[in-house]
Image 1: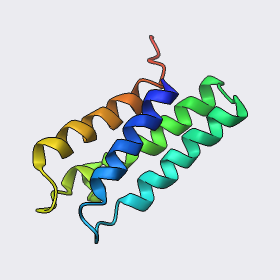
Image 2 (image 1 turned 180 degrees about the vertical axis):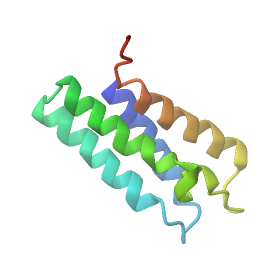
Image 3 (image 1 turned 180 degrees about the horizontal axis):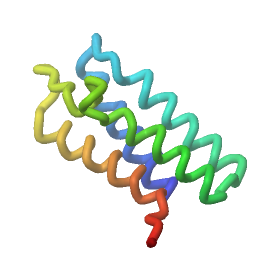
Image 4 (image 1 turned 120 degrees about the vertical axis):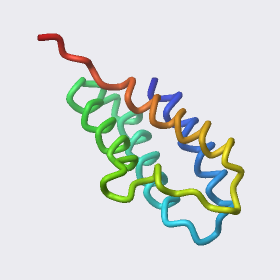
Length: 100
């Protein structure tokens, strides 16, 4: 799952480079570095994975003018939609759903 998330983040960052002035590349580069740090440290405890997932999915929060509100003319909407969903899904899958 972490490797998939790293791949999706890399693909998203490559797409974002088409919009030179975008404010999001640095955020996703930081997220990718955090994924790589977890992989390198073999820190695969659920708490670390949940924290990583939350830090990435929080970038999409529409209340904070999140990444979901970013629609640049320089990037094809269908590609952006697909990669946006892929990154969100890959991050979300790291979380554990608690049952009550």
